[in-house]
Length: 304
Image (cartoon, rainbow, N blue to C red; front, side, top):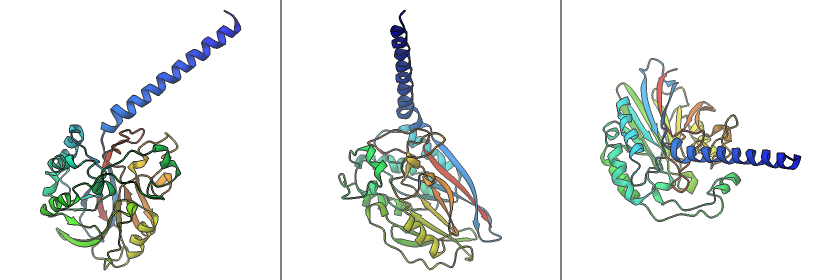
């Protein structure tokens, strides 16, 4: 074989190998990882001294559409954890036809005390967007593109009927055993629906109650506002953890102004603690995950 032929053959084998590896990654990202759910656990010392522990289940970004039976089964089974409190941080549905399926899978959890805020995809159906645009900054920049209106008021009334607190630009109080939980939430900052609800909180760490902030999109100004107001713990979603992550490097984008190393997980924020959920679902127009498994968070809150 000539030198030219040998080089051409080697190049062909390399290209074939690269193509095979790319196909395997694509198949994994579309067919396997979006359905490889994981429960992330963390223990957070945020309760007043002497308090018993509290199990908080944080769910976010289901983006449920008709079908998706594995996702619905997994969410329903989270009730077996027997959480003391369930909080959802929005983007529950991706289709008007998904509402019955949503309430079906949430039914066992709706028997527990709970609270909720909404995300943009509780208000509007998703639309096709250029995924590379997320690398340039949040998708809310410029003039946001919205799909058809979703039945958000039916969603709201169903959650309220179950006794869950509506924290969209609102406050509330739950008494869980001997612990008083004072909650404040904001509607989705990503589409400009957020308003500060003026919680009557003491400085973080000094209150007799847990002071809990809840929001969908974790923009820095919003997290700063909660922390300055005295929040002990803030829950958020929206980022999907990046949805696609580069191993050993992290998320190329967060779809907000958080750094890529803050796309998911627990982090200190001033005197508060923040948990950003990577979410249970995917963007319906881009149903792919890589190196970023879909998740819910079981947070065991303990005394400081």
